[in-house]
Length: 111
Ligand SMILES: [Zn+2]
Image (cartoon, rainbow, N blue to C red; front, side, top):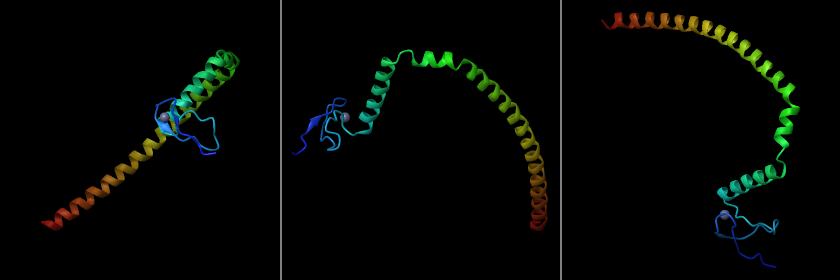
């Protein structure tokens, strides 16, 4: 049986349904596939209106643990950044010193 042309539900353009998906109602263009995903998500949320609320109340303790962890991480990260900057500044200073020495040497040669 030859696959028959259909009109995409999303963009209205004619398309040939995938032979593995005979019930396809949306063409395979990126826009329409993306729209389809959004629609699926919306439908799923409408079907599970309390899912996120439920999760949030369930995860209240987990969330605070998470926040503590991220604060701890940020503190450690800032210490690391400070060390990194200090080290980097030293390196930059050495680099600039070498650069200026080289610059003066070249200038002297030029004269
Ligand atoms: Zn389409």
